[in-house]
Amino acid sequence: MPTKRTGNDVITKISLKKKGKATLHFASAKKITLSENAFTDFHLYEGKEVTPLEMRELLDAASLDDLLAYAMRLLTHEAYSEHDLRKKLWDKGADLEQSRKILFKLKKQGLIDDTLFAKSFADDLADLRLYGKRRVVYELHKRGIPNAIIESLSFPREKELDKAKRYVALLDKKNSRIPNAHKKQKSEEALMIRGFDEDVANEACRFLTPNDPKAELQRLERDYAAAKTRYSRKYTGYDLSRRIFAYLIAKGYRYDDIHHLQEKEKL
Image (cartoon, rainbow, N blue to C red; front, side):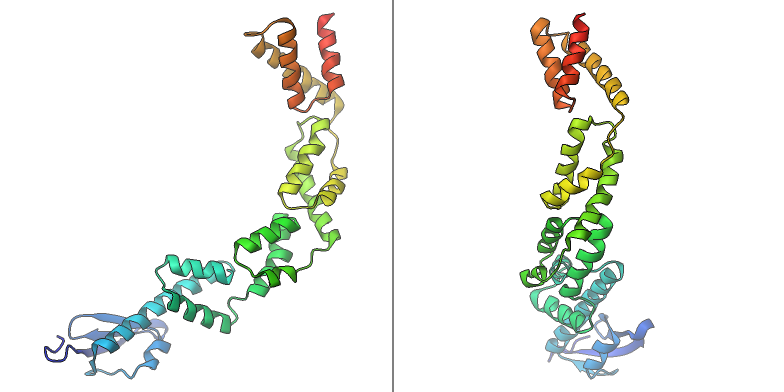
């Protein structure tokens, strides 16, 4: 038990654990587990009286050990920017000083490096996810990467175009049922949302495969019939024709094809 006169506690036992950790057992029944490095920072032995100030220091060291171990576990699964790892530590309960110490140690060991993180993101992850330059810059800003690092990155146009063309190949399959008149526009919009510059998106869309005109005409006829069934419940004559026309235009069909189909209906 802590002594009544001084409030000190006594280490009754020190047990060594795996990976060099040591658990301190106190007369008060309190236990504190420290890493090997933290343990050697203190002059600890069985029978030692520990003052309240020393106890707080030991508890702080144990807490720092736990937070450092948490950060290391995160880094074994994926790379983090300094900003994002700091936020993770804060969410885990770390204070400003604890997060500062942990980040300093990890940077010293080369386990976090915003310059390498940004370059890897721009070169590798963006290539895997097919992100354009503007999306890469946005994502790096979101992760707290300093402007100076972002501005040092290069985005060769040929590499941007290669990524855009690969994304176009995916869009080709996704938009295989979209009318040709609408397909290029939707693909360009998708590429720009993905972060590609307009000129890159435009050039990449030249590699789109046009849908089969006969299959497209068949889809138009099906959509026309569906629209007619839907709107004829409420509209007739000119109003019905106008509603059907607007519906089909919105789906991306060509004006001439719709007009021709409507004229056929009148015969």
